[in-house]
Image (cartoon, rainbow, N blue to C red; front, side, top):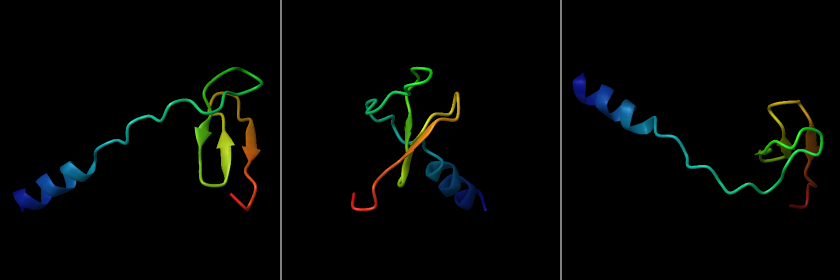
Amino acid sequence: MAEEKAKKEAKKQFKPYKPATKFCPKCGSRMADHANRFACGKCGYAEFKEKGR
């Protein structure tokens, strides 16, 4: 049981930040890069990506 818990803890590693690719035009914060959009967590602004990308 302790081995299973250790394996789960090892999987909980965070991904490193990517360099900022886009900044929010409303508030200037760094935008999150999702699969289908760029989103600002501070003000809620979102830009959707094209389907071809």
